[in-house]
Length: 622
Image (cartoon, rainbow, N blue to C red; front, top):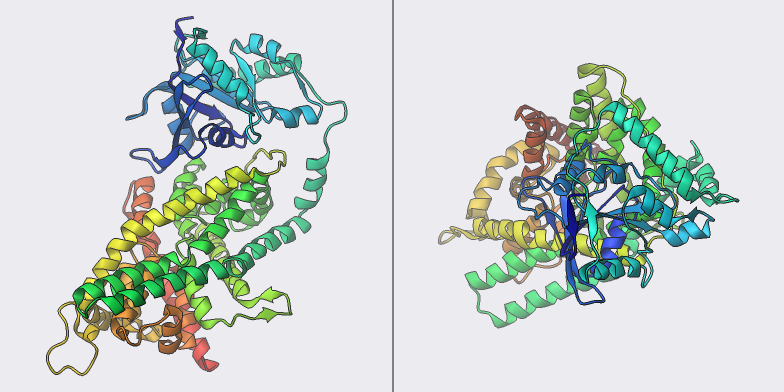
């Protein structure tokens, strides 16, 4: 033994995916945590702090989940480098807390941590579930075999971290933990096999399986993983999500929208007519308010996603989709990157690093932006609210939610179609399938779900306060300057810089039914897709003036035809991605060639889809 630890002031949580590591982090830190990205990589960094019962303040880092220190993805590389003390700008941890699922012990990672030269503690999470299922773990023997302290934890219960906190206090009062010399290196194939055999030996000696195994997971999987019933249930869950986006969020959306309208009316009544009033009402309130009104829908969407992740259903969804993706020529591992892209294409593109084959990785990267990211949701919600009646189909299905479900389905189908074409015409060859672990089902922790939703809401608000705010100020300036000449008969916005840009581009977009106002917001929307909604709010507020400006949905319904609205929805199914997505594609492919291909083919598909939709709608009187 080469080193010891007495007072841990900086600990790191390390563990396999789905072991409850983040639940333990939330239980320790509560609201005292912050989320950001590691410098230089788009990997989420969670850091928090807590005070032990003995009064000792501890900083804790929640590292991305990994099965091994042999990094195959950016997340795993961050974990490896943080554990080894190689991460730039990150303080090496004083103590590594290896979190393990007591119902499904996997200790290969623990054996690797034994070689990094830092004190390690093993925390057996979900110990109550293991005991309830009849799994007996001899923690003292396990501690002797692994040569580390072993504590039990129940992260989702009050007081469930008491054993861990008590051990940290004991260390602060003089107890020391041994740390081996740093001998870690990339394990050879033979060493990996030896590590797995050693784990089997330890588990055989320290863990007694239940006399009557719990069959609930097996019973549920017989239904949820059925080739036909499982797919039907997955589609039903997705359908329910999009119905809830409209049905549940209605009152909160109306309240937020009414609040911004009242604030704008108050400023118009108190401020004299001029540039300041226009900036505040037409630029800031109309722009930012038209985006923030969709915060309830985004929170509901992430509520479902986080709930299903905590439940253990997401890996089952990946398993169900594997065969379907194989027909499209997609690698089995592509499901997780594509699923991540529903939140944002950037982490989806980053997650494609786990795919070994270069051509399979490139296909996944190129189609990831076709997944309907959360930035499209405000655009979809705005246009559906303005042009699709709020009525029931067959007396039970919300028509607006049905259209939303169709748009998400169109994105998925188009992604698979593009992948099919690429793999058949450009990169031929069969796609490999993948093997993934299916964790046991467990009841989601309400605290973790709510904290996850709150974090996503804060990220959305931060985006609204930075990118969207700056773009709204730019749009307001372009829409207000230089102003109308003396004797002008048209509104001043027609003579502004925005009007000049829009009228210059409008002939190119006229065949798809787009107006010059749409041309303006499509240009600035390259910064972020949701900027289109705020841009429309600002442009139409400036154009309408304070006397006629109203709710954005009413203004669009008055100015647009149904064909234009449907064409806009079709455009955004394929809409070219934002600048940030193109930059990440450039970084991941190490070439500007693939971002150019990505932008070009999506722009082409968007134009064709909008053109066909507008013409078909016109043929039917739309």
